[in-house]
Image (cartoon, rainbow, N blue to C red; front, top):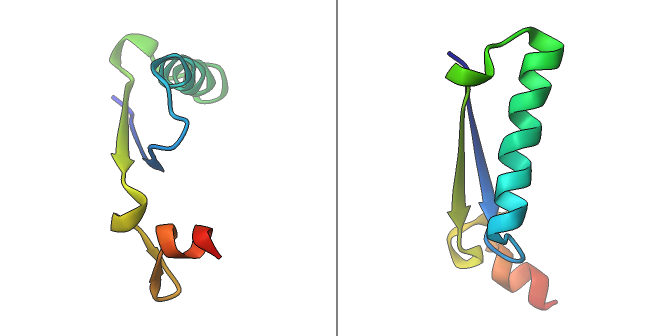
Length: 65
């Protein structure tokens, strides 16, 4: 049972985009790795940009530059 976990910022991440991502990742695992789509789990964790840091600063601060 494969489990794929994405951590993404929530900016522009609509319900339609999430559905598409889940469907395409499931299809990719089935096609490329022979995994059963019925037991494939895809989790999307949305992270606020204030809670995500790169090189010592938050993504919010980096994007404001």
